[in-house]
Image (cartoon, rainbow, N blue to C red; front, side, top):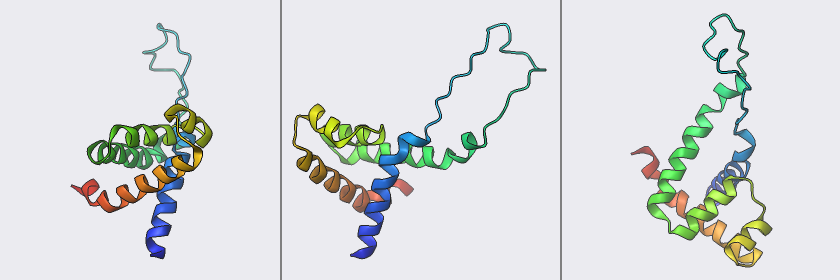
Length: 119
């Protein structure tokens, strides 16, 4: 039981904090300079270290799309994009306590069906 609770908490933390690791920094490069070989382009080490997180999130997305209904999928997308519980409740027109219940059910559903991630 404790293992399930720990797994659920770690999955919840990952989904709720996923928006913090997304690196959508846009470089301001002129069209003429885009293909310059001699230009110095800095590589951010975080861009390569978060690859596993992005892969895992994509796998979760595919799994949730398969096993959940539209409301649960929307809940997952809103959670992973960093929306607050209050915002999610307003969007789905539900109470905050109901959002917490749906989150808990969604996490349980993911954990029960996560073997499909390895297929």
